[in-house]
Length: 260
Image 1 (cartoon, rainbow, N blue to C red):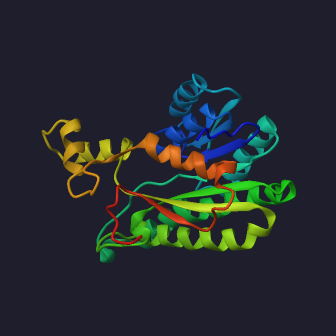
Image 2 (spheres, one colour; image 1 turned 120 degrees about the horizontal axis):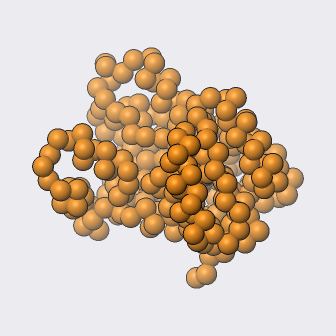
Image 3 (cartoon, rainbow, N blue to C red; image 1 turned 180 degrees about the horizontal axis):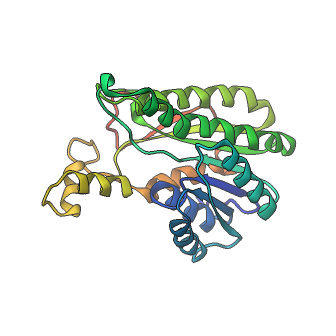
């Protein structure tokens, strides 16, 4: 199947690394204009260059702290100035924040909700009016399998991600009459910068490649996923090929989650 996004403009948060960058590259390969948001300007420029190597259309990068409502509005206005519209929104910003429930302060809770839930709410609220007007839109919320199957000591991430799944269903139901499709991708273990950070903080002498292989133990497919595999599914959901798919929360985890 040849998945195309010609004539579409995509806005991707957390787009400078990992899943966001892989998704941006895949969208650009499929013919979309791509705008990426992230906090670090230098990392953004590096990512923009990587996307530009495969892009058939425009690529733009805007520094933005998505926990700041003013910064979100400013970045959105910049995207509109550059491309005139947003057809596809990928809410990808977020890191894995976990700990013992009794140790999680109000400050940590608020920061996690600001990053993973409120940012998605604010950006969705900004793009939806124009999507409704054109009667075409795609919103993809990048969550985690813990949203469906939370473990002990998985808060606050599992809680904010579960809220993101509820947001996905609400938006999908409310905007289906406008042909705006909203889905969630629930990530399991994927080779990304987060895996590399965990390797560094683990204090192990095991090489990164061996650490990644170890992390694949217990996954039915026998390995950790690749960011490009995630991006392929995101590209499908963003395309006309997925025109009857909305309100879903799809596990991208090699079969690890006990919940379908």
